[in-house]
Image (tube, rainbow, N blue to C red; front, side, top):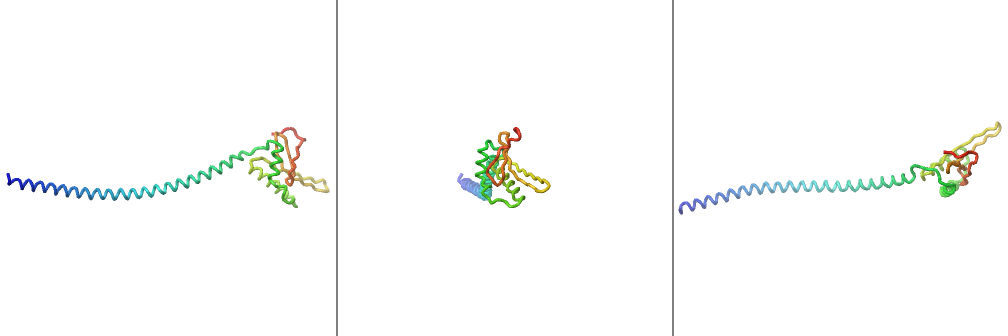
Length: 173
């Protein structure tokens, strides 16, 4: 039996060596897997950081778009003034009448268009009208801004803040 003892010891040693060699191979394979996983982790971390940056930029863009939408919704759709006092207060706050008087027909009409654009930017409807008369000798030209309040026409010279109610027409749309 002693003869087989060293053979069993040798066989045990061979088994241990084989297991060590296999384990060493597995260890190398595991180390390679670990390196690949670490590289993947680094890549994914970089992608996550970029995605978070993109998300922040998109959120910022969304916030700006929502603010713009809110400002548009505040004045859209434009509407008529609800009362003559609302129109008069708006005209006073607009300040168009504080500008120097225009010296040309075109300037006068441009002033009326500017009042119209200012009103639209604040969510109100104002129209522009001009009248031309020639009586064979003299020519007359007038420019008006017009607002409709509860079906009643109000008009004024765009260089003043003094709307006048038009009593010639019945209620309009």
